[in-house]
Length: 357
Ligand SMILES: *Cc1c(COP(=O)(O)O)cnc(C)c1O
Image (cartoon, rainbow, N blue to C red; front, top):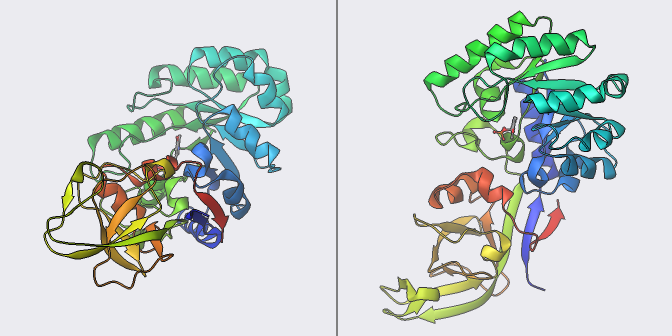
């Protein structure tokens, strides 16, 4: 059988969840498991996240998958619902919505009694300068007062555009607007911290924190490694050596013959490619790990295979190669690929076999 495997380390996930608890001891934890738990597989991850207070997902379909798997924790739809007809399933399945524009308020209003009877909270989104979703400061205070007057329990919610940046001026603006609205609507529950903000601003933890990437053991910061943050990689993406070749100086490897050996060398072919979710374009030199040591990827990544340099290494047919995991960090692969760990994790394909360890 072709070996391309995604191992999910439940203990690492629990460790990272505990890190959130240490950093935000008084807040409830809404574990973000959108996009199939950042590509890790909802089923395995939810079992390991049993200590979380709630889950956050991007759409009703993702929420229903969680309910079908039998998990009963509160779930928040972070973009709310996309059409009026979704409200029935939302209420039936005890799912909470974000509201970020007037139409969603109308839909909520039409189901007011059933929603309130189920004790579901409404997450009211402030647009404090990211300019994706939400009501502006000038609108949101009235929106919240009206919802409260109707009997809804509200959570003021906001998302930072630059929580990963040290000194971005927008951070202050967003914080100030959030605090201003929070004060004007008091008493109200509040939530504005993703992973980066959980690490940086303990004073903003408030009632609910919303960790995503840190749970999976990748860094939300370009300039801070997971070791500095004390979190552990959850996913190990690996494949096996399926062929070994010796090539002479001047010989090339792979499509386009982009790699030409400048000396005689031993290469190995590994059963992984962009069909598995391994990225193809590498503006910088990329590496994999064999027996915990880095070795370079050479030539182009193909759909099902890559070539690596195994000169002087202990490499045989069947030797396991780590594409990313504990020895070759996904953040470093992402950097070589000109992207972020989030993207590589989320775009895993369905082809690799998934195993829980
Ligand atoms: C995805 C998401 C998060 C989690 O962000 P991370 O950077 O992965 O921690 C938090 N809040 C909202 C609204 C999100 O969409």
